Length: 68
Image 1 (cartoon, rainbow, N blue to C red):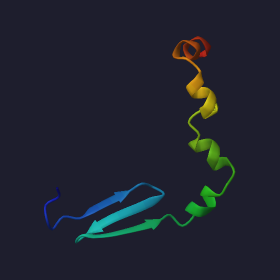
Image 2 (image 1 turned 90 degrees about the horizontal axis):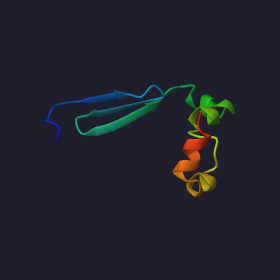
Image 3 (image 1 turned 135 degrees about the horizontal axis):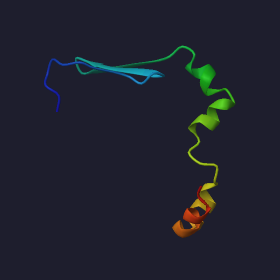
Protein backbone atom coordinates (compact mmCIF):
# COMPACT_ATOMS: atom_id res chain seq x y z
CA UNK A 1 0.00 0.00 0.00
CA UNK A 2 1.32 3.42 -0.93
CA UNK A 3 1.66 6.07 1.74
CA UNK A 4 -0.70 8.99 1.30
CA UNK A 5 0.66 12.05 -0.42
CA UNK A 6 2.81 10.11 -2.89
CA UNK A 7 2.55 10.23 -6.67
CA UNK A 8 3.34 7.49 -9.15
CA UNK A 9 4.54 8.26 -12.67
CA UNK A 10 5.37 5.33 -14.97
CA UNK A 11 6.68 5.91 -18.48
CA UNK A 12 6.37 2.81 -20.69
CA UNK A 13 7.69 4.61 -23.77
CA UNK A 14 4.48 4.25 -25.78
CA UNK A 15 2.26 5.27 -22.85
CA UNK A 16 2.68 7.23 -19.64
CA UNK A 17 0.57 6.48 -16.56
CA UNK A 18 0.26 8.92 -13.68
CA UNK A 19 -1.42 8.48 -10.32
CA UNK A 20 -1.62 11.71 -8.40
CA UNK A 21 -3.82 12.35 -5.37
CA UNK A 22 -5.73 9.11 -6.09
CA UNK A 23 -6.47 10.18 -9.69
CA UNK A 24 -5.35 8.04 -12.60
CA UNK A 25 -4.41 9.63 -15.91
CA UNK A 26 -2.67 8.30 -18.98
CA UNK A 27 -1.39 9.59 -22.28
CA UNK A 28 -0.18 7.80 -25.38
CA UNK A 29 2.77 8.80 -27.51
CA UNK A 30 1.52 10.88 -30.44
CA UNK A 31 2.74 8.51 -33.15
CA UNK A 32 1.67 5.34 -31.28
CA UNK A 33 -1.40 4.67 -33.45
CA UNK A 34 0.65 5.07 -36.64
CA UNK A 35 3.26 2.59 -35.34
CA UNK A 36 0.59 0.17 -34.11
CA UNK A 37 -1.18 0.10 -37.48
CA UNK A 38 2.01 -0.48 -39.49
CA UNK A 39 2.45 -3.99 -40.89
CA UNK A 40 5.93 -4.45 -39.40
CA UNK A 41 4.60 -4.04 -35.84
CA UNK A 42 3.10 -7.54 -35.76
CA UNK A 43 6.45 -9.20 -36.32
CA UNK A 44 7.92 -7.24 -33.40
CA UNK A 45 5.34 -8.57 -30.92
CA UNK A 46 5.29 -12.15 -32.18
CA UNK A 47 6.79 -14.55 -29.69
CA UNK A 48 7.15 -17.52 -32.03
CA UNK A 49 6.69 -18.51 -35.64
CA UNK A 50 4.96 -21.75 -34.60
CA UNK A 51 1.17 -21.78 -34.54
CA UNK A 52 -0.32 -22.10 -31.06
CA UNK A 53 -2.22 -25.29 -31.95
CA UNK A 54 0.94 -27.12 -33.02
CA UNK A 55 2.96 -25.67 -30.14
CA UNK A 56 0.83 -27.48 -27.56
CA UNK A 57 0.77 -30.74 -29.56
CA UNK A 58 4.57 -30.96 -29.87
CA UNK A 59 6.40 -32.66 -26.99
CA UNK A 60 9.32 -31.05 -25.18
CA UNK A 61 11.65 -33.74 -26.48
CA UNK A 62 10.68 -33.00 -30.10
CA UNK A 63 11.13 -29.25 -29.53
CA UNK A 64 14.57 -29.85 -28.01
CA UNK A 65 15.65 -32.04 -30.94
CA UNK A 66 14.64 -29.40 -33.48
CA UNK A 67 16.22 -26.48 -31.62
CA UNK A 68 19.45 -24.96 -32.79
